[in-house]
Length: 264
Image (tube, rainbow, N blue to C red; front, side, top):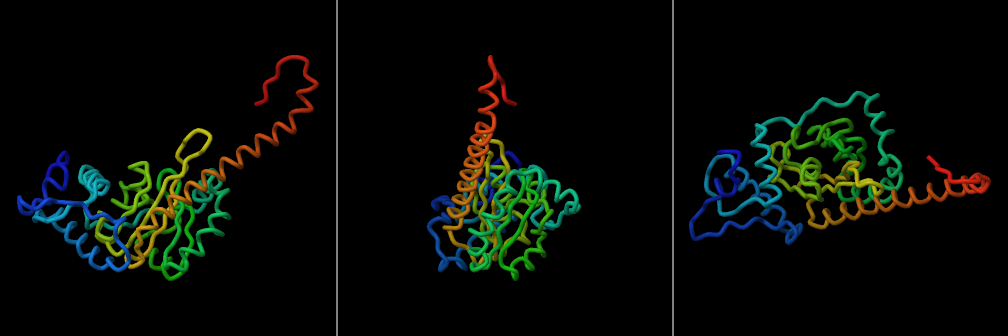
């Protein structure tokens, strides 16, 4: 298989009379979960064994799988990574604006993911996990795939996953079951959305919701995207408040300046 050719053109051939159509996760619900997981496992096995299939991965997944093949990742690799030292982790937490949002995220989202048997993950712009919270049983299970604070979840380290693929695609992404490139993640489902600095558009990091594949719901993508947008709105409001405070403090001083003044 060459890196320049689409996965679905090479492996999802099937019968010439059968059209290959990607599974639409948005049309699924919890009742379809087991059937969907079986279908996705079949697509994954066909993609990397060369066997024909009647389906095709979604375009965002197809593009990600091609990136993984270009850089030489194996579907059988481990998801373990070298964790950040505690000092480096704390440094990154202090350096990001996302730290200001953690109290709000914890109040608004953690109770939801806890009840849903999932976890909330917040990463920096490189895909390094800075914070993780949620259902304690799922947190213990997440440790087994290295979904823990300080771990790297970019595509280059962990393959196709919501965090890394949202970074690569620069948009919200949901990755379910065997849509994950690495087989050890096939029992997981995740949805993630980027958060940008409202002042200059700079990427700050990713908000992700992950859990066992049995917890899949298509609305999770909309939920995490809404949370990311609310996070941007809160950052924007904080910035505007800080500007107003600066104006209030500077106004009396500027009134005493005879000519032009520049506040830095």
